[in-house]
Structure formats: C-alpha cells, structure tokens
Amino acid sequence: MAAKLLNSRLATLVFLAIIIGVIPYLAPSAFYLRVAAVVWVFALAALGLTVLMGYAGQVSLGHAGFLGIGGYAVAIGPAQFGLHPALCLLIGAVIAGVLAFLVGRPILKLKGYYLAIATLGFGVILSLVFHSESQWTGGPDGMQVARVTLFGWRLSGSANWYWVTGGALLIGAWLALNIGASPTGRALKALHDSEVAAAGSGIDVSAKKLAAFVIGAVYAAVAGGLLAAMNGLITPDAAGFMHSIELVAMVIIGGLGSVLGAVVGAAFLVVLPQALTFMHDYEQAVLGFLIMAFMIFLPAGIVPTVRKWLLERLS
Amino acid sequence: MSLLSVEGIGISFGGLVAVDNVGFNVEAGQVFSIIGPNGAGKTTLFNLVTGIYKPLRGRVSMAGEDVTSLAPHLLAKRGMSRTFQNLQIFFRMTALENVMVGRHMAERSSLLSDILGLPTAGRQNALTRDAAMALLARVGLTDVAEATAGSLSYGVLKRLEIARALAAEPKVLLLDEPAAGCNAVETEAIDHLIGEIAKSGVAVVLIEHDMKLVMKISDRVLVLAQGRHLAEGPPREVRENPAVIAAYLGEHGTREADRAHG
Image (cartoon, rainbow over all chains, first blue to last red; front, side, top):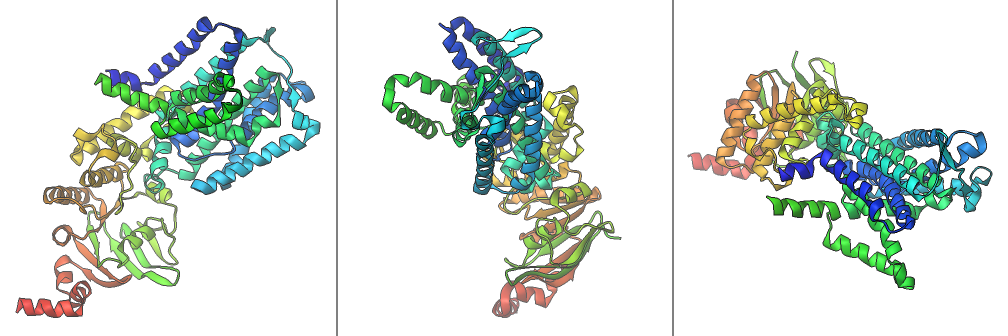
C-alpha cells in the first residue's frame, strides 16, 4: 500500500501541489516567493533533462541554449513584432523544438562523452549568437522584456509570478510523469540500459532519442520564456554554459529520472547560494563542497535515496 | 521457401575474416543449431543475420524477402527476435517491465497520448502488462515479476531474455547460448521451452555449447570452424563427421579419442 502510494503518479503530483500551495502561507516576505518562483522555473527546465537524461540516458551540456531561445522569443516577439508574450512563449517552444529536431538527428548518433561535447558546442554556439546579434538581442547586456498582460490582468509582482510558475511546473511534472509511465517512457528507459536490446525489441532507438531531445528542448524553452518574462530581462548568460551545467547538476543531485528529484535539485541549486550568502567570500567554495558531499554520500540522488529509505521503513 | 535463408554471408574485421561464405536455411517449426569451437564466428554470424553488423558479402532473406543490412529494429518488425550471449537486459527495470518492452511493437499508443496520459495509454499499459505476465508465467518467472532485473541471477536473466524475445511474437527466434550458466534443472526447462517454441511454428536458430542439449533438440546442426562452414546435417550425422571431431578436439585429441575408444 505504502509502496504503491510512493510510486504512484497522482501521489507525486498531489505532494508537489501541496508544497506549492503551502509555501506562500509560510513565506515571511515576498522575497521568498520570488526565490521559490525561480526554483519552479528551473525545476521546469530540469524536468526536460529528466526526460532526456533520466529516462533516455542521453546527456546534454547545452540545454541552457534552449532556455535562451525561449527567453529571447518572449523578449524579441513583443519588442520587434508586437506579438503577445503568451504567443511568443509558444513560438519559442516551437522554435526550440524544431531546432532540437534538426540538430538532434546528427548529434544523437554520438554516445557518452562525444554526445556531451557535441551538445556543449551547440550550447556555446547559441550563447554566441545571443551575444553577437545585438540588433536583435541587445548584445551582452541583454534586453528588457515587456510586462505581460493576460486578459487585461497585468502580470506583475512576486505572488502572481509564483502562481504562474508553480502552475507551469505542475503541468510540466504531470506530463513528465505521464511519459515515464507510458510505452514511450518504457522505450526510453530501455534504450538507456541497452540500445542493442531495445532495437531488438523493435524500438526505433534514434527516433525515440530524438523525441526525448525535442521534449527536453521544449521544456527548457518554456522555462526560459517564463524566466525572462518574470525577470523583465534576458541576457546571453541565461543560455550560457554555466546554466547548462547547473541544469545537469540539478537532475543528478535531485535524482536522475525522478520528477520530484528535478524539483528538489532545482531547489538545492537555487536556494543554497542564497542561503550561503552570509559566508561572503567562501560562498562558492562551500556550495561546491556541498555538491561534492551530496554526490559522494547520495550517489543515487536525494529523492531516490529518501524514497528507498521510506520504503524500507514502511515495509 | 525457407523462413530464414542466409546465403554466402561474410565479414572481415581489419583483415581478419571472421565469417566467410556461410549459408543455411531454417524452416518454420525447426530448431537449427550452430555449433563450433570458441572463436568460430557463431555470435558474429548472429550479429550479421540480426543487422548489428552489416555483411560485406552475402544475403539474408526472410520468407523470400531480402532483409540484408536492415536496421535491427526493422528486422524486429519483420519478425526476427534474438537473445544475447552477454546478457542485454534492462537492468534498472523490473523483470515485468523488461518483458513489457518486448511488447513494444504490439503497442498502439501515440507519443501525444503518452505525453497527455490519455486513457489509450493507460489501456495499452494494461494490455501490455497482461501479455508480459503471461510470458513470465510461460518461462516460470512469475514470482520475480516485480524484482529489479539487476538483482536477479544469471540463469533467471537468460530465461527473462527469452520471455522478452517471445513478447515480440517472432517468426524467427535466434537464441545465443540460452543454457549458458544454467544448472541441469534450468537447462531441462530451457530445452522444454525451446521445443514448445518451435512447435508453435517459430523457426529457432540456436547457438549452444551444451552438446547434450544440441543433439537432443536440434533438427539440423551447422558446424562452424574459423568462420567457415565445416559441416551441416542432422545431429547424428554431424556428430560422427571426422572433420567436426577434428575441429573440436584437434589432430592430437582425435588420435587420443580413437585410442580411448579402442
């Protein structure tokens, strides 16, 4: 019974919904909501990597590039073409998806380290484009993103953005959970363990990898669009290498392949730097040390370790 | 027309001819065994037939249709399944899920319905699960259905691979050493299972080192030595073929064997 509950999709969603619902009542100030909203956005981006890395086992070190595409779509669309930001969010997701489809075909033939380097190169290229195409992107300083109005309601303030990002995360988590429990998810997890055996079972391995790559890109683009609109600003940094690494670290620290793990990992890497600011000069060093410690002592990631512990206690 | 037909197939790796001009035919319902000393090219031959290696020469056809060099997943769609000598198990999944993956081709749900969690995906999951449970029962693994594959023993995993291969409802089934590492009881069970599979009209191609098993269940035996066709025929004929005995035991060993037989 307990085991069933711990593994069920609905339980995961309800748990996440309760967390999202409760935080505003516990948060002492708007600043905390702000931080939480950032967590939700990065968790959404990390969920894309949960599908790509966690399910299908394909690493991407350029995923923030797709985040940048979503962000710049929401910035450029309204500024240059007068389009509605919500429409631009959709357009950004489509562009990221199409680009992932085109780039993914040749790239996903590579495995392991080679795939990592190729995706890294792709991320670097995107970041360079955002840097240098200043007539569109505002160059290294980035660009302002117009305030969002939805059905005559001006979307501003930490509380509003908290609910929008929290809702987006819930939807994203629901979709990722669906994929995980479906025939497609089974195929992705299968090729993660053995491509030869997956192909032998009739799974079109390259098509499935590509699907996972496209899904991951769309997640990142939507997250990037929300992040840019919420911050009112997007810079090439958002698409940079460091962010790609952060996204990978989130899914690994939280627990590879775990939906809740992506959220926990995002919380870890967004909240901890804030919490460590009192250490001033040592902040980064302590953060790095903590990441190392978590990987050494919880190699399976936080959520799978806790889940296993709970299962052993309950049974 | 044979269900599986291989003609003059060959491949070299960096100048070393691993398989050279090998051909054979397997009919529906037949158990066709491939034997030979270590390094004879048996598994390489399997890899050529199942599309993992692309042959430099020769042709593979199924029921008369040329399937040479088709990608493995397309061959699977044509009805070819296999197991692997060095297990290719989805170690992080449960035994049941391993077999469910084998049902992939029978699954009818689109990517979209999978993502949105539509009822079609749920119904498909239930159908797949039932079919997979039935297959686990067939190979006698019902009690480990929910166990993670990585925690199961070698002999159990060998049977799990067979269940997964059967899940694809193959017309041609290639088994690479299904009884390796199995004890006598397990070998007996696999022997029985292979017989049943063949009886259901599947063409079974078998690589096996357990000669007792091979001689008992095979309709025909192909002997490979150093990548070449050495002999082919019914088990009894092959067993008495002097060239086969020489290949297995060597010149010296053959003399010893003669002396031992008196």
